[in-house]
Length: 246
Image (cartoon, helix red, strand yellow):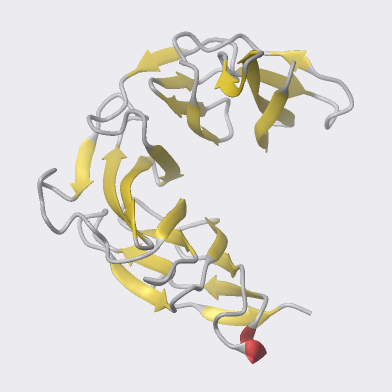
Protein backbone atom coordinates (compact mmCIF):
# COMPACT_ATOMS: atom_id res chain seq x y z
CA UNK A 1 0.00 0.00 0.00
CA UNK A 2 1.53 3.31 -1.10
CA UNK A 3 2.26 5.91 1.55
CA UNK A 4 3.74 9.31 0.75
CA UNK A 5 5.43 11.65 3.20
CA UNK A 6 3.62 14.98 2.95
CA UNK A 7 5.59 16.90 5.58
CA UNK A 8 8.26 16.62 8.26
CA UNK A 9 8.46 18.85 11.33
CA UNK A 10 10.78 19.04 14.34
CA UNK A 11 9.77 20.87 17.54
CA UNK A 12 9.92 20.26 21.30
CA UNK A 13 12.56 17.58 20.69
CA UNK A 14 10.13 15.43 18.69
CA UNK A 15 10.08 14.73 14.95
CA UNK A 16 6.70 14.40 13.21
CA UNK A 17 5.94 12.87 9.82
CA UNK A 18 2.63 13.48 8.05
CA UNK A 19 1.73 10.62 5.72
CA UNK A 20 -0.89 10.30 3.01
CA UNK A 21 -2.00 6.75 2.28
CA UNK A 22 -3.47 5.36 -0.94
CA UNK A 23 -6.69 3.48 -0.25
CA UNK A 24 -7.98 2.55 -3.71
CA UNK A 25 -6.07 -0.12 -5.70
CA UNK A 26 -7.55 1.23 -8.92
CA UNK A 27 -6.71 4.88 -8.21
CA UNK A 28 -3.16 5.60 -7.05
CA UNK A 29 -4.08 9.24 -6.41
CA UNK A 30 -6.99 8.53 -4.08
CA UNK A 31 -6.07 8.97 -0.43
CA UNK A 32 -7.49 7.78 2.86
CA UNK A 33 -7.31 9.74 6.08
CA UNK A 34 -3.82 11.12 6.77
CA UNK A 35 -1.56 9.51 9.35
CA UNK A 36 0.78 11.19 11.83
CA UNK A 37 3.90 9.52 13.20
CA UNK A 38 6.32 10.79 15.83
CA UNK A 39 9.91 9.99 16.65
CA UNK A 40 11.76 10.88 19.85
CA UNK A 41 15.10 9.59 18.55
CA UNK A 42 15.44 11.73 15.42
CA UNK A 43 13.86 9.24 13.06
CA UNK A 44 15.39 5.97 14.23
CA UNK A 45 12.02 4.63 15.43
CA UNK A 46 8.45 5.82 14.89
CA UNK A 47 5.14 5.57 16.76
CA UNK A 48 1.66 6.68 15.62
CA UNK A 49 -0.06 9.76 16.97
CA UNK A 50 -3.85 9.81 17.47
CA UNK A 51 -5.58 10.36 14.13
CA UNK A 52 -7.15 13.84 13.99
CA UNK A 53 -10.95 13.58 13.85
CA UNK A 54 -12.76 14.58 10.67
CA UNK A 55 -9.52 15.46 8.94
CA UNK A 56 -10.95 14.41 5.60
CA UNK A 57 -9.10 12.69 2.78
CA UNK A 58 -6.95 15.66 1.85
CA UNK A 59 -4.55 17.79 3.88
CA UNK A 60 -3.58 20.99 2.11
CA UNK A 61 -1.10 22.31 4.66
CA UNK A 62 0.53 21.52 8.00
CA UNK A 63 1.84 24.08 10.50
CA UNK A 64 3.61 23.15 13.73
CA UNK A 65 5.08 25.37 16.44
CA UNK A 66 6.69 24.73 19.82
CA UNK A 67 4.84 24.10 23.12
CA UNK A 68 2.78 21.33 21.54
CA UNK A 69 0.91 23.53 19.06
CA UNK A 70 0.06 22.38 15.53
CA UNK A 71 -2.60 22.82 12.85
CA UNK A 72 -3.74 20.61 9.97
CA UNK A 73 -5.52 22.44 7.15
CA UNK A 74 -7.82 20.42 4.93
CA UNK A 75 -11.56 20.23 4.38
CA UNK A 76 -11.61 20.90 8.13
CA UNK A 77 -9.12 22.64 10.37
CA UNK A 78 -7.60 20.49 13.14
CA UNK A 79 -5.69 22.00 16.06
CA UNK A 80 -3.70 20.46 18.89
CA UNK A 81 -2.12 22.19 21.88
CA UNK A 82 -0.76 19.07 23.61
CA UNK A 83 1.67 17.71 21.05
CA UNK A 84 -0.90 15.73 19.08
CA UNK A 85 -2.43 13.73 21.93
CA UNK A 86 -5.83 15.36 21.31
CA UNK A 87 -7.29 17.44 18.50
CA UNK A 88 -10.02 20.07 18.19
CA UNK A 89 -12.01 20.40 14.97
CA UNK A 90 -12.52 23.98 13.78
CA UNK A 91 -13.97 25.48 10.62
CA UNK A 92 -11.84 26.70 7.76
CA UNK A 93 -12.59 30.27 6.70
CA UNK A 94 -15.44 30.58 4.21
CA UNK A 95 -14.06 30.03 0.72
CA UNK A 96 -10.93 28.14 1.76
CA UNK A 97 -12.39 24.65 1.44
CA UNK A 98 -10.89 22.46 -1.29
CA UNK A 99 -8.33 25.04 -2.35
CA UNK A 100 -4.59 25.28 -1.91
CA UNK A 101 -3.89 26.67 1.57
CA UNK A 102 -0.71 28.33 2.85
CA UNK A 103 -0.48 29.02 6.62
CA UNK A 104 1.99 31.11 8.63
CA UNK A 105 2.25 32.28 12.24
CA UNK A 106 3.86 35.32 13.88
CA UNK A 107 3.30 37.46 16.99
CA UNK A 108 0.20 35.55 18.07
CA UNK A 109 -1.47 35.85 14.66
CA UNK A 110 -2.30 32.86 12.47
CA UNK A 111 -2.24 33.71 8.75
CA UNK A 112 -3.86 31.70 5.97
CA UNK A 113 -3.72 32.32 2.22
CA UNK A 114 -6.17 30.41 0.03
CA UNK A 115 -5.59 30.35 -3.71
CA UNK A 116 -7.58 29.52 -6.82
CA UNK A 117 -8.20 30.83 -10.35
CA UNK A 118 -4.84 29.85 -11.85
CA UNK A 119 -4.39 31.54 -15.22
CA UNK A 120 -1.42 32.78 -17.21
CA UNK A 121 0.99 32.56 -14.31
CA UNK A 122 -1.35 34.42 -11.95
CA UNK A 123 -3.92 33.34 -9.39
CA UNK A 124 -6.69 34.69 -7.20
CA UNK A 125 -5.72 34.94 -3.56
CA UNK A 126 -7.70 35.42 -0.37
CA UNK A 127 -5.86 36.11 2.89
CA UNK A 128 -7.29 35.51 6.37
CA UNK A 129 -5.87 36.24 9.82
CA UNK A 130 -6.82 34.81 13.21
CA UNK A 131 -5.78 36.27 16.59
CA UNK A 132 -6.98 33.20 18.51
CA UNK A 133 -5.36 30.22 16.81
CA UNK A 134 -8.18 29.55 14.35
CA UNK A 135 -11.26 29.99 16.55
CA UNK A 136 -12.25 33.04 14.50
CA UNK A 137 -11.08 34.52 11.20
CA UNK A 138 -11.00 37.94 9.55
CA UNK A 139 -10.82 38.22 5.78
CA UNK A 140 -7.94 40.61 5.18
CA UNK A 141 -7.60 40.46 1.37
CA UNK A 142 -9.64 41.17 -0.55
CA UNK A 143 -12.06 42.64 2.03
CA UNK A 144 -14.93 42.03 -0.41
CA UNK A 145 -14.98 38.43 -1.75
CA UNK A 146 -16.37 39.79 -5.04
CA UNK A 147 -13.67 42.45 -5.34
CA UNK A 148 -12.49 42.56 -8.98
CA UNK A 149 -9.00 43.39 -7.66
CA UNK A 150 -8.66 39.98 -6.01
CA UNK A 151 -5.78 39.20 -8.35
CA UNK A 152 -2.40 40.20 -7.00
CA UNK A 153 -1.04 40.54 -10.51
CA UNK A 154 1.24 37.64 -11.17
CA UNK A 155 2.97 34.62 -9.75
CA UNK A 156 1.64 31.43 -8.21
CA UNK A 157 1.99 31.05 -4.45
CA UNK A 158 4.47 28.50 -3.13
CA UNK A 159 4.61 29.71 0.49
CA UNK A 160 3.36 32.39 2.88
CA UNK A 161 5.82 33.64 5.51
CA UNK A 162 4.90 36.07 8.31
CA UNK A 163 7.15 38.43 10.27
CA UNK A 164 4.48 39.98 12.53
CA UNK A 165 0.75 40.51 12.84
CA UNK A 166 1.03 43.16 10.11
CA UNK A 167 3.83 41.97 7.84
CA UNK A 168 4.00 38.89 5.59
CA UNK A 169 5.35 37.89 2.19
CA UNK A 170 4.08 35.72 -0.64
CA UNK A 171 6.87 33.45 -1.86
CA UNK A 172 5.93 33.01 -5.53
CA UNK A 173 6.82 30.21 -7.91
CA UNK A 174 8.27 31.17 -11.27
CA UNK A 175 5.71 32.33 -13.80
CA UNK A 176 5.57 34.50 -16.92
CA UNK A 177 3.69 37.23 -15.01
CA UNK A 178 6.50 37.52 -12.54
CA UNK A 179 7.89 36.63 -9.13
CA UNK A 180 9.40 36.02 -6.70
CA UNK A 181 8.16 38.17 -3.78
CA UNK A 182 5.13 40.23 -2.77
CA UNK A 183 4.72 41.83 0.66
CA UNK A 184 2.07 43.33 2.91
CA UNK A 185 2.72 45.79 5.75
CA UNK A 186 -0.91 46.31 6.78
CA UNK A 187 -2.11 42.92 7.91
CA UNK A 188 -2.82 41.62 4.41
CA UNK A 189 -5.12 44.37 3.14
CA UNK A 190 -2.75 45.46 0.37
CA UNK A 191 0.12 43.63 -1.37
CA UNK A 192 3.03 45.10 -3.30
CA UNK A 193 5.96 43.75 -5.26
CA UNK A 194 9.22 43.80 -3.31
CA UNK A 195 11.17 41.99 -6.01
CA UNK A 196 9.75 41.26 -9.43
CA UNK A 197 11.31 39.43 -12.34
CA UNK A 198 9.41 37.39 -14.97
CA UNK A 199 10.08 33.66 -14.61
CA UNK A 200 11.97 34.17 -11.33
CA UNK A 201 10.79 31.93 -8.52
CA UNK A 202 11.05 31.75 -4.76
CA UNK A 203 12.06 28.32 -3.42
CA UNK A 204 11.27 29.11 0.21
CA UNK A 205 10.99 31.93 2.75
CA UNK A 206 11.30 32.19 6.53
CA UNK A 207 11.29 34.83 9.28
CA UNK A 208 12.80 34.13 12.69
CA UNK A 209 11.46 37.34 14.27
CA UNK A 210 9.77 40.58 13.22
CA UNK A 211 12.92 41.89 11.53
CA UNK A 212 15.07 39.04 10.22
CA UNK A 213 14.07 36.86 7.29
CA UNK A 214 15.44 35.01 4.28
CA UNK A 215 14.22 33.67 0.96
CA UNK A 216 15.93 31.58 -1.71
CA UNK A 217 15.45 32.03 -5.44
CA UNK A 218 15.25 28.86 -7.49
CA UNK A 219 16.61 29.74 -10.92
CA UNK A 220 18.95 32.06 -12.80
CA UNK A 221 16.36 34.38 -14.34
CA UNK A 222 17.93 37.33 -12.50
CA UNK A 223 20.78 36.93 -14.98
CA UNK A 224 23.69 34.54 -15.57
CA UNK A 225 25.79 36.36 -12.98
CA UNK A 226 23.01 36.30 -10.40
CA UNK A 227 22.05 32.63 -10.19
CA UNK A 228 21.65 30.59 -7.00
CA UNK A 229 21.21 33.10 -4.20
CA UNK A 230 19.77 33.59 -0.74
CA UNK A 231 18.23 36.98 0.03
CA UNK A 232 18.22 38.49 3.54
CA UNK A 233 16.05 41.13 5.16
CA UNK A 234 16.86 42.91 8.43
CA UNK A 235 13.89 45.30 8.40
CA UNK A 236 10.88 43.01 8.43
CA UNK A 237 10.79 42.27 4.72
CA UNK A 238 10.78 45.86 3.44
CA UNK A 239 14.15 45.49 1.74
CA UNK A 240 16.21 42.48 0.70
CA UNK A 241 19.94 41.99 0.13
CA UNK A 242 21.25 39.25 -2.13
CA UNK A 243 23.94 36.79 -1.01
CA UNK A 244 25.34 34.51 -3.72
CA UNK A 245 25.87 30.84 -2.96
CA UNK A 246 29.29 29.26 -3.54
